[in-house]
Amino acid sequence: MLKIILPLIAILSMPATLYSAQALIWEYDTLDIFFESTIGESIGCPHSIEKALRQNDHTYETYSYLPLDLSPYDVVFVTLGWYRC
Image (cartoon, rainbow, N blue to C red):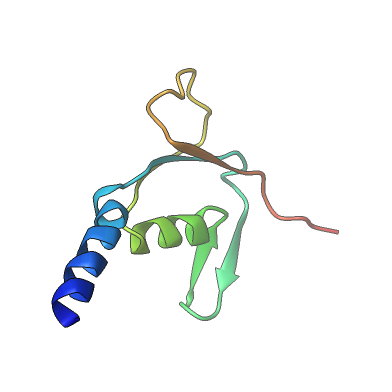
């Protein structure tokens, strides 16, 4: 039984390890930063998105402008800043 289950797990998990999305993060409001007390430094809007992509082995590029050609990217994240009263 173990001889069947282990190869099956390996085959089913292969697509997840082989596919890595190319992401674009458009940081519209580059001046919008805040102090993150858990890491002890100031961060911008795309920080958490970049961290999640990095932890999941995806490649990304962060720009303060939206490129004219978006065809190289599998996904585009748009950060528009933080809501302030």
